[in-house]
Length: 364
Image (cartoon, rainbow, N blue to C red; front, side, top):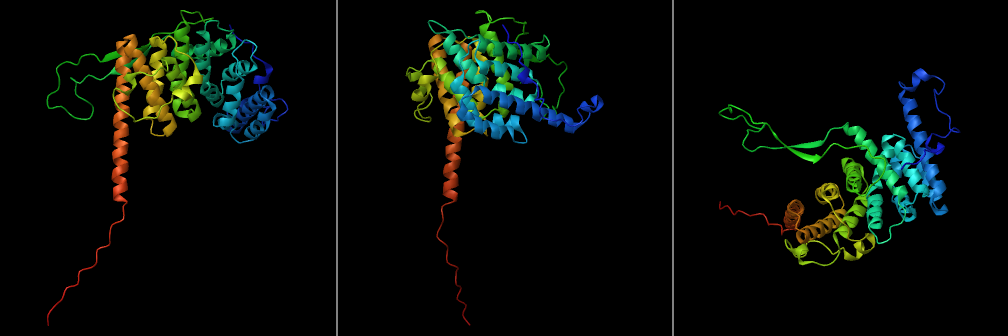
């Protein structure tokens, strides 16, 4: 299913645009392109303010008045919280209509705003669709299908591949003494097969559609705000199951704080096929090891990875066990190195007693 685009997705007609009467300058004038992007972003922000509670109007109006309204919206925790508190996911949900129309606007900065809500959309969708009596979630599914269709078009029928290094071959960083007589073809791993167009979210295609949405979020994760990453980590821990398990502390005792209470309201234990688990682990890997991530994001990712490791160990999924175990070991080593560095820095900054200068007595 899909929504019909509303007129609110176009730039407001009440806002004048320079050179609007000259079609030749539309594609060549950077000022026109900038103004069109700003006008479109302001129009979308005003449309969002119209469907949110009145308490959100003033903060959103200030975002619309900025020089970069779309990026201001992306970096606004108040706007994210207001949308999070109002999403229902039904076909009549105006927020799902807004996300759908905003993504189809094709403005790169507005698309980043929609992608920042992917953890929330996917988290709520998966938690509710697997409930005993799932409600209508056609609004969520329309947005997920829009993300899937965009990625399908971008890949153009090709799979996502990764080249695996061959240690038997010389690297580009040194010149071997003897050149190999024959070079074997590089090993190639499959990340995702070619995508097929989908008109609806069938139960058999749901993992693939959700996984593609998570991949779209991961592809822009360096632009995503911390609260979006934190939401995903907490949902991932809840999906794995929040019951205490000794497997969580198999590799360390108390390197991370407990996040059980935080994850309690984030969802339920759900099926985790590889189509969903693989992009989830890639996102968690960034949250865990990204140098610019906040400590809250790193701690939440640490807890989520340990929850997924415990789940994989109980479900006996070899590839999931290997991936989560590797992330845990990287996390342990990174934390131990940071702790050692902080200890050495504190010792280096400790003031020492000033040594008195030596006085040499010289006899005449």
